[in-house]
Length: 334
Image (tube, rainbow, N blue to C red; front, side, top):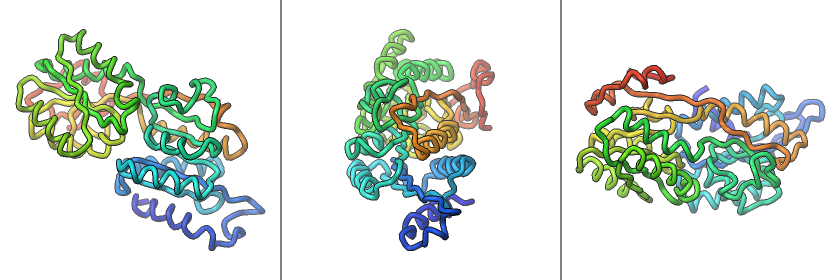
């Protein structure tokens, strides 16, 4: 099914639910449940559409079929903080049985609106530090879910940067403090410690606009031996195409957190299998819809990680992909 058709289908199901007789949507007295989804990507994000489609298929395997016994309302705020808050309120107002929150900012926006409606998050790095849960084993409130990236990963990304681009001597970690975990602080200790260990100059690059992203990338390219680590946050994801283009234009080697970026022309990535997280989330949605409480469902860490490298991009940057990376790469883009 094409992405636009799938999203349109979800929207039409939600929009027309009040007009459909319950008997047409439910079987043998089966009640119809409602799920809200809040995401920071744009409506035409193919990766999100694929993940949401996979989520729906897994949910159907557990007995919840969109249009029959479950309706889904999706809101895309596309990195816009004001829109995020508006959509969070909209979703709370329709009183869904559960809300799926994609990323830290979405979860925070929903938490400000309700302490009652169950929330299952995906792609959140620091749920304890963000105040979403009391602890990973015992969340203790109306929120639980699936983490994606631990703080120590920032050091790993820097190690990979120097491994594929050994000439790099100064590296920036770029993020938007409005959308990054802990305003960006979650990853900075690991990044700066790794930089000291590798005898590299660390640079903290906070950006709030496309113009600021361009300024950072131009600066890294203007002075020799510069490299980039892109922090996993919703804003970086939303602007990944721009970052890829500017890295190529300014000859800046960069390491990312998801294989989606090397597949689109980025150099190298290492991080959790985000699709696997989306495939695990329906288990919690199912359990909550059947009566379980989020407080009793422990937050789960990622279990699958993957590395991707783009040979064409490495060649354009004048880099040779080392055998050590080739042996570990799950995805080699020729």
